[in-house]
Amino acid sequence: MENQEKLWDKIAPEWNEYKQKPSENAIEFLKKTKGNILDLGSGSGRHLTKIKNGKMFLQDFSEEMLNLAKKKAKLKKIEAKYLKSPLNKIPKPDKFFDYAICVSAIHCVETAEERLDSIKELYRVLKKGGEAYVGVWNAKSKRFMDKSKEKMVGWGDLGKRYYYLYYEEEIHKLFKEIGFEIVSTQNSEMMINFIARKI
Image 1: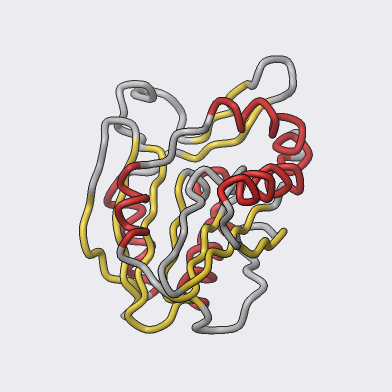
Image 2: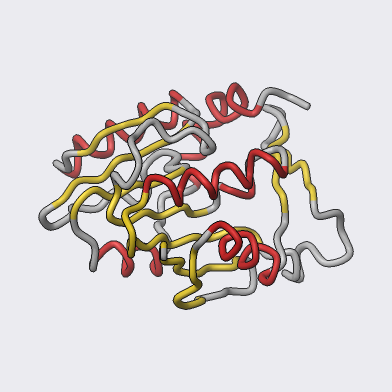
């Protein structure tokens, strides 16, 4: 399999043009937040938002994606911090973040162990009672029916991106086993979206 970090670095400029529109549900979630906010798997920063009495931290394993996010923040005059690291290694201490979003990111992690570790890390860095808005691809989507749960999706001739497709009960179970409670769900045909709270 092609190195995914290098692939996302390559496609970053085109991806930034393609993925401009933020998730409306994620933006609504961010409106109520304050304190330290983590955008885990931020990509080029499509969810950059001014946080009242707080600050956003954008984490991604792609240097090029983060560079684009920095440019976006400068244009929007938003102060943010940037963390270059994979999802399963969040370089912050325990209970550092008040809230988090993780939109279309966990399903890009290549192994089951690393996907689980990513959820564990999210739990570790959230304060007790802290909430995370999470979105992953839905295995029951008409787009994916009768196909393997693991997919390689091409991006022109630049390479293929890895995706893992989740069932709703599957992703909820993983979060609950680690210590989250599922507060609400906001699914679409393509996505499983939910808010999880650390208990």
